[in-house]
Length: 142
Image (cartoon, rainbow, N blue to C red; front, side, top):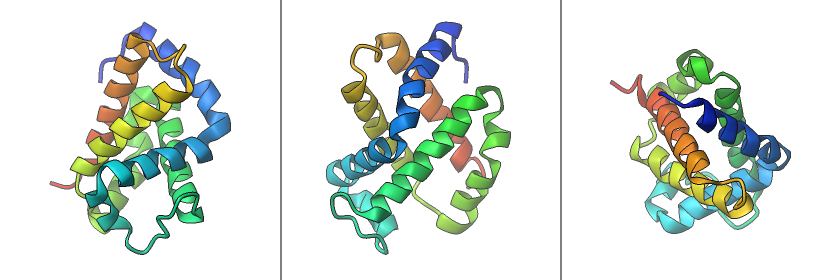
């Protein structure tokens, strides 16, 4: 991943606001993913997928906490996300394409809540970051 200094600054500027809303924004991203891409529900058959459910809130918060860790360690994503990569590769075995779908929904959530900060630079930076996170999470599938 090669983020410019401007992209890094845009990411951290938005993320400072997100940290106060990880649960709600994370839940919104998951609900959007399930609504737009119903095939992703397959991996969550044991969850209550209704609007506002605790399962969605917890999972959304977990995902946003992982993104938070990645943002705080952008230069060491592999090391930072290694345990999460192991979990996805060896236990959960989530279809790698689902990471891309969730990433698209995360971008929508960020753009919706922070329109004045979600510039083209921020969009580009978050897209690169989320793609890199997805790549790390699926790197051990092979």
